[in-house]
Each structure stands twice: as structure tokens, then as C-alpha cells.
Length: 360
Image (cartoon, rainbow, N blue to C red; front, side, top):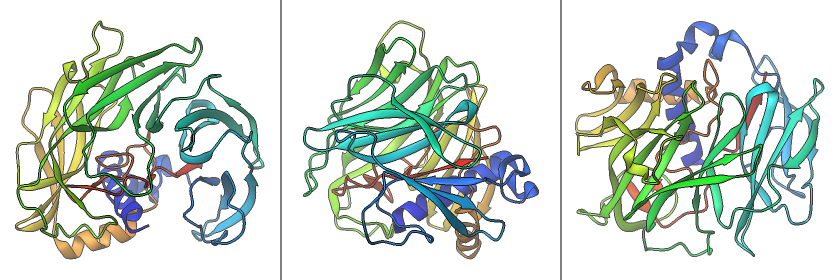
């Protein structure tokens, strides 16, 4: 939970600066959500831990910030597995990634929410399953394509071996066709998001390297133990998904992390496919740095927050997990599977981070 809250706070802080959400009462466009949809094992206020775990929890969002239970959704089939990630899509639709470990596979489902908060029309996007854990979901603005990355299923013990490579798959929902881009060598891919042209896909590639200072506490406060590797050299790419090729690093470079002493918390490509915004965390001096970037230009620092102010931002921004306009994407930190903690690669690799979506 500590890791999930930390990531949510970072995402919210980025979106506050990008969308000026503070002027709208904390929510994009001044709209408070009507319902909160949750998946995963983290209990909510209105549905504490205990009893059978629902596949999806639906709660009404009250003006006082509390939640009122509306209902729960059981798995649509015995083979559906456990819902681990949910994102909102255009037209009031939602997409869920539901995974099981034996066999290792993820099934992708889509549904809509009625005005009374009832999930309806739950159906798989394709008849076949993804033979891995799927995460980092990102729906195109027109709702026609879904992008995601994959990871091996957890074995319950973690693994000291870093991921062998990174990949992004784009699923054409109408035809069921898939196209995958990949990069060799140990790396993570995250922050997958579409531009407004429904063609350009943005994402962050982070290299995994042997840790030069093993055993040093990075102060992340997250679960798991260090794997002997760290995560760095983050680069934001913009990929033309209709061009030829299958190299994930072939996308245009929008931002490249130059400060080796900083830890990238988030970096998101903007709607135009050429600019974006992000957050860096520095230890010397301790601070949180917000920045903008644009293709071919140096990054521009927009705000630097000291430790006391950082704590205030973390406490106040946890609820800001939407964009204005919405991006229909997970956008949870440097790795959607929770393997990157405070600049280190952790052996804990079973921490879904995008377990909440909102209906307006």
C-alpha cells in the first residue's frame, strides 16, 4: 500500500502541474467523479478486508471524500482470473486486465457503467488470452486500439534476474490483430500513453544496470528487497505505430534523463506527441523537481519542492489520478508491475499499481 500511495501521489502531482487541477477543486475540468471502480486486494474504506474478494468493487464518490458501496462484480467466468488493472476509456467504457498464474495468462475485458453504477456488457476484447501478465494499459482516444506491456507471472519468491527485455503490444480491438515492438537487453517500459492523433504512442524506456552501490538504502519505503540492479537512463520515446519496424527504441526521443543523481518518478508524453511533463526526485539536496520537455529542446524546470512541501503535496494529491482531457492510461511510475522502487530494481514483482478508475 505504501508503494501504491507513493506512486499515486507522484502521478497526482504531475497532473496538478500539467492540468492546473487545483483551480478546479482538485478534479479535471472541475468535475468530481460519480463512481470509483477498484480491483486488486487492497481494501477500501467502505469494503474492508475480509470475506470473498470481488472481481471489481464499485463505490459512489461522496462530496465529503468518503465512499459508499454500490455493488461488486464477480468474475465473468471461472477462467477469468484475478482483476489486477483497470483503466477508463472513451465513451464511458472500462478495460480490465485479469491474470492467473496457472497457466500464466491475462484476459482483457471491456464493459460500460450504467447511470446507477452497474457494470454491464462485460466481454473479452479477444477470444484468446495474453500468455503473460499484461499491464500499463493505454486506450487510444478513439477507443479502437489498446496498448500494453507484459511481464512473467510471479513465482511467489521473486527473482534476482532482471527482465531480459522490454516490449509494447498494440491490439486492434476491431480485428483482434496484435503488433509488438521490443528492445533487447535488460530494460523496463512504462508510462504508455497515446497522442490525440490515435497513431503516436509515447512511453518511457529505463535501462536496468548492475547496482554500483548494493545494499544502500534508497529510502523508498517500498516492499521487497534489492535485486542487485538499479533502474536509470530513462528516455521518453514517441513511436509512429503505423510505420514499419519493430524496434521499441526507434521512436523519436522527446526526453533523455541526464542527471544520474536523480530518480525519475514519472514522465508522460503530451497529447501533441512532441512534448510532455515529469517529476524527478533528488537526494542532494533533497527535493522534488517538476519539469516540462519538448522534442529537440532541453528540459525546463517548472517547480522545485522541498521536503516539507513535498510531504504536503503527497498528502493532498493522492486523489488526483485523472487527466484533463483524460488520457485513458495507467501511467503508474517507472514500471507498471511495481518492480522499480526508488531507483532500484526490487525482487518484489507482484504489485499491481493501476487498481482504480473513475466514472464521471
